[in-house]
Image (cartoon, rainbow, N blue to C red; front, side):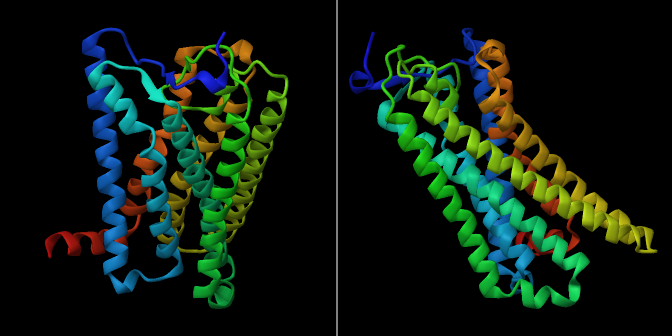
Amino acid sequence: MSNSSSITQFLLLAFADRRELQLLHFWLFLGIYLAALLGNGLIITTITCDHRLHTPMYFFLLNLSLLDLGSISPTVPKAMANSLWDTRTISYTGCVAQLFTFLFFITAELSLLTVMSYDRYVAICKPLHYGTLLGSRACVHMAAAAWGAGFLNALLQTANTFSLPLCQGNALDQFFCEIPQILKLSCSHSYLREAGLSMLSVCLGFGCFVFIVVSYVQIFRAVLRIPSEQGQYKTFSTCLPHLAVVSLLISTAGFAYLKPLSVSSSSLDLVVSVLYVVVPPALNPLIYSLRNQQLKDAVWKLISG
């Protein structure tokens, strides 16, 4: 039995044993990653270059695109490299860095999505107070709070996870370094402390989700009073996909962190992790660009020169 002090690397879960399937996973992840890079990169460049988009909503959208790029980059490129080179290893330091950066960006993204729902609530339900409640200084403070929450949560989670003694080997049943899989390697009862901290984070995430749902319920109630069917359709077509992606992120991440070990399986854990690690960063640019005519016009103007 090895101790955590002697562990120099971890073994990640391989997607498949057959070489053909490994290459298939590589090309699939490469396509998703390039789509996320292209979509989020276009949004960041367009909002930065077009002064007409320098408003609170697009400021938060720019931050969301930055967080999407940050959340998908620590995990997917490493998984692609492992599939391409037929390897499973990740160094101990690399695992620590991967876990910290992923938690940092994913927590900050959830916090920012909560802020964005508040922005839409004020814009639709309290338009006369929008300039007061969401001035430039308030927007910067809320965005900074989201990034700060991500950093604090990642620091606490990573420090607590890797402070535990690991003596159950070094094989992780996941394609990236995930807290529940690392806790399986612990031989100390103090892992309950980390499990409690993870549950606290999930509860905070659920609190963000409740806030988002309540905000959108108020938005929908206000929109239903609008006599224009076109205005109702525009709002619903924008808000419902956003709510669907947030629900996917919260439900799959909560399941991954709170499920009992008795229902754990490699295939199930793999599917769940892909749904909350890979899918949202690739879908968010589509939701926020294809449903927004002003942003689409600005992107086309940027591309066409």
